[in-house]
Length: 148
Image 1 (cartoon, one colour):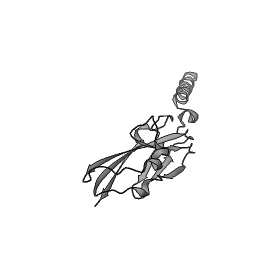
Image 2 (cartoon, rainbow, N blue to C red):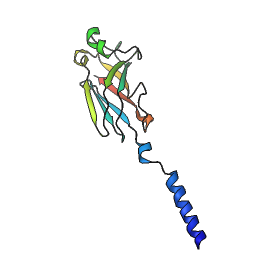
Image 3 (cartoon, rainbow, N blue to C red):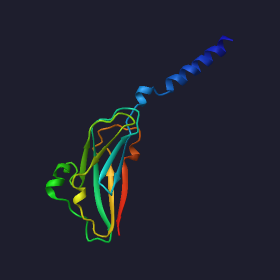
């Protein structure tokens, strides 16, 4: 019977060796949401490890109706400009603990006058790729604003 014990023990050792360690599997997972009614950007860490600093980008596009998207006051939007993302508004977020979220309201949002039409806002969490996330496929959020 020693052969059966050795085979069973070897199988158990192989299974334990193949299982990922909890420390190696711990990663952040950043998800962004956006409210077009008040310009609130919400970033949440759904992962099981603290994130690093991150940048959320916001791109806008007119879909229908209006001639163009409204332009914010240049001095109000200046803090959101980043040369690394020339065609986007950027919001910087400090590190987030697992399960925590942070909100940021765009200071220029209340001054925008949207003409009737549809507008698409595409947000990317961790746009600079500073975090090695458990799920890189859920970083993009698209929100449509419809103005009657």
